[in-house]
Amino acid sequence: MTMASTKRITANLPADLLEDACDTTGKGITETLIAGLEKVRRSRAAKKASALRGRLNIDVDLETSRERTRQ
Image 1 (cartoon, helix red, strand yellow):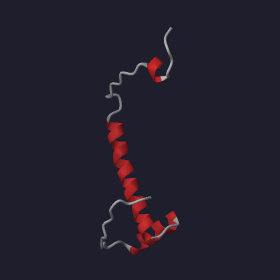
Image 2: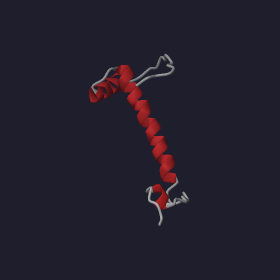
Image 3: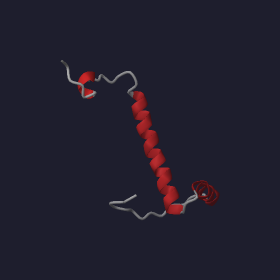
Image 4: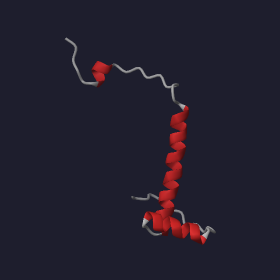
């Protein structure tokens, strides 16, 4: 992962929770926190996508999308 910009933070975290999370990921503190934050982001995106269920109108020409020519 390439980080365009980073932000140094100070946070008070429960030591046992952080240790368990690091054991679970098998990674260090920074990598574990990044993985957790990415999971939060994906969760929000999934909720937004779920809210759209049945409400998205898509107009697609299947023949064109399949790159088939009509004769």
